[in-house]
Length: 135
Image (cartoon, rainbow, N blue to C red):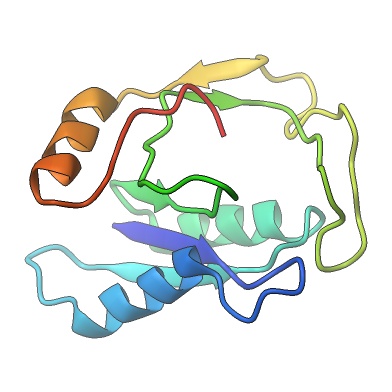
């Protein structure tokens, strides 16, 4: 299993996604092998690093987490949109507008995971959660 988060950005000192990945990696004692990584907030590097991690570790499951500013809950994504449209520059100063994440690929991908059930289970544990249609 591969679990990723992101480094801090936009002047913040921390990023909860990266912090959670580090903490879970340190505490993990589950039956599956867990590989964790904190990715750079850099449109030119993050995707390549994720692809390299998948090629190197060949995980059965990839869980990619990130921070969605203004949300006060964990929000599993139902749809991945193949679009880079940055509201602010990344840590390297890149600010893509209306560009495909993967040129020539479909505009969107639906999750094969039971995201509604996942959000329900998270909420049942006392952590605010709801389904997001896209990041």
